[in-house]
Length: 375
Picture (cartoon, helix red, strand yellow):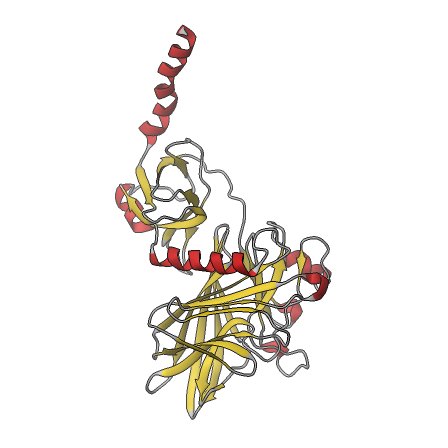
């Protein structure tokens, strides 16, 4: 008994070095009724430097105040020279709080969980992924070919490792060798949640993207821009830039779209391509969610696809090829929405009910974000 008491008395001494070195305390509060699991959380870098003005970006650590374990992080720059945000990946229980300490010291190297790149060796593709999902968009070099496509493509995965480089190197990604594959068909459609102007109930597609820029590339968030040449929309010259972000642990991209044109409000639609065979569909105008559990693709399994359009109340409908969410854009003002996917063979979201539940929880998390503070 004396030995146990002596050990307990020593515990504060074990924690004292961390407390003594603490330069800033980061607090994350989850006021919702949902557990947040492996969620990427961002803290304003200016708020951190206000507390810790002499912080060395190459020589600090983030430590969990309870466990005293180091927490991997990312310095997000959003394409700027200066750091904009500190990103960490955390799990926070419903109605729970997590505290982190920033202390001096050489940090551990974070495991890279997100990645994206321009793929000149495959007709200017741009591909990106995290530890759950993978996607691509089609570039200028594909135009004019018989296999040209417009919208967002899905690569299904059942591995947490990053596969883009390996799959492009072998060129054999239409066959599942244990990690996943590409069987999703896009064609001349919006695919898995792309966006385009709509005139008299007809989608007016742009050509493929012509400009790209990587703003951040992991380990916890990858963000990039795709720019498109101007095209004619009902007599107006329209240009568009899409900024896409994917966080570690998420099935959903954040898509920020800015249209540049002269004139009034521009009607646009976010769409998901339909299949000939019946699938399971959810179209919830109140929540802005369109979800599609596709018909099974033979032995390859089933893909779940979804879009969530935020902001003003939306209307939904269909055309011959798509499930559509109708919204509007204003000149040089961002339209923000989310698109994403899941796979029945991915060992996580295996049926329509699980996919729809995931999306409902995701929307609730958007409406009840984690609250952060720096002290």
